Length: 149
Image 1 (cartoon, rainbow, N blue to C red):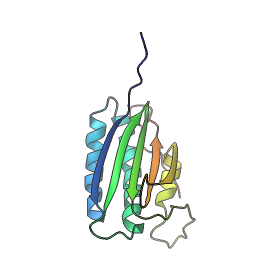
Image 2: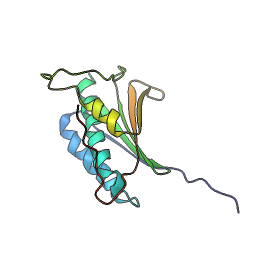
Image 3: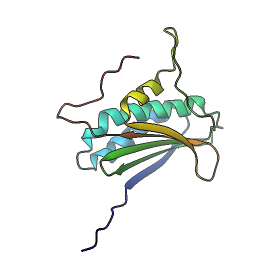
Image 4: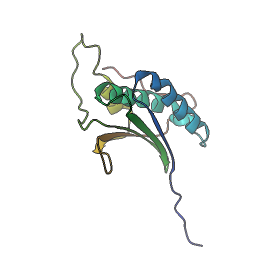
């Protein structure tokens, strides 16, 4: 019997590029994960990382009001891949915030909690996509690890 490879089940949505779209992004991720076997094993970490990536896209993209931020979720084997696409070509960089900085810690969370993450130009167009791969949490009460930044 030939072995068939299952294609990843991908979800894609385009949301307004504004902070008010963040709750909708979280809701869509929760709905996506609720349809997956053991989707709850990704939920806490995935929701936190999606919020950070989405907030960065809103804050740093100087897009006109009619542009959107695209979010993508896909389960590939047992890893959840999150992508956030925006129109800004500037790549995110980890920086060391001072104690007085009100921003600048989000990528540290992504760096600590994601199995891997990175950035690439958007296929065929303007801007970039930032992605993060999340391993399933282990244990019944597993959630994101406490990170001190």
